[in-house]
Image 1 (tube, helix red, strand yellow):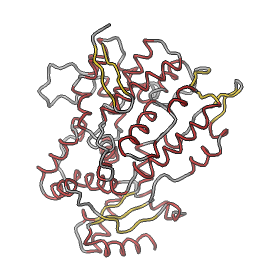
Image 2 (cartoon, rainbow, N blue to C red):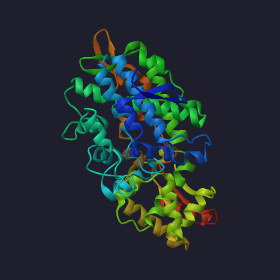
Image 3 (cartoon, rainbow, N blue to C red):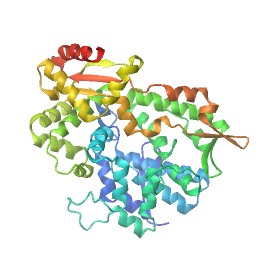
Length: 424
């Protein structure tokens, strides 16, 4: 048997790495993920949520391999899936999705697009490290016979023109294991995040889901008997977004650290992609001023409080348009400054959140639910088969549509101003 290592994963058990997969796992670019919390600031609410992006990446690599076996892919294709699964989050920034919205605004790319540049060798996140002689991921891939461009396309789930495959073929089916409406990524993070947070919402019937998945006409579909398990998965996903991923406390911490980073002089925003959580916190601490204040507040969990909020059921007409407009950072900052000025406090002490808009950028797959069911040789969308799935697609998965936060001592004053602002 080739030389390899066994990783003892808390969710999936013993997972073997050897050859190309082991070289990639040991690369500095992949190991950076060991210093990035999978759930960002969720540990401020769920003390067990200290698992990392590396753990998740290992899990996705494993799940991609299992799905590949179930679907009848060849050994070479299964290795490709495991490689792509391991690398799918290689460009995640500190505290995972916390900085996604800010960086998307600054550089016009999300972490998957930056990941493509790292995997293909167009971007070097190790340039400032003492590892000049270390193998880069793209070099390992080439040496192992894997095309970096093909791996990047699998992670993006797109064709060469950047659009989703319109005509299914074996390649698009292969890529859908990594990036699709229901992929190895989601099958791992729902189970893993439920395990570490202790929240029962994420418990899903994983064996049943895997035992009913098949490849039909170059499409990944599920047999009719797997529908109840799929319904359970989508229920779990909606509840996890509502109670964990967009929990108000972790969202407030994300708002604070994003605002603090804007106060730091960053010559090259791409540099953030080479950092882990500790690097970013050190950057804020050394920057002084408001950035250092935020560093201490997060370290000691002295966070801003909600002064005013609007639930999704209260958002209609003109108010919906105003909230969507606040999805633009510059518009949100203007509103924050206006409220702060009226309250007579510093502008950075008022922070506004629009979770729904953020979700659109951080998880665009959420509303697609393009899961196909095979029954008597005929394929139908899960939404046609399951009224529950259809209802879940329409359900709001965020607790608030808009949230205005501030320091505890300014809460009442800011709340009254915000209420007048958004009620007029």
